[in-house]
Length: 103
Image (cartoon, rainbow, N blue to C red; front, side):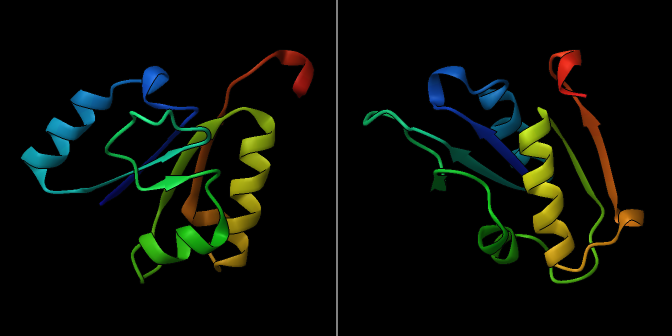
């Protein structure tokens, strides 16, 4: 299993320590992307945004099931990247969160 989390920076990274402990305990890969990391931030793998190229590097080679959630613009970006990687609707599971006006 591969877990990927995106946040603005370490200061607002939800459940960072808990996910690191679970990753150590159960042996899954735990990747972190910070949009705008502070100079003192540690333990992240990518700065900027999650994109197709990075997903291609870190996702398992076989047809993975992918679960993702976030605001509308994030969801659109991830869905486009997953389609480009050949991950079908059947393998994509998602939940939107954000203001109802975005729907």
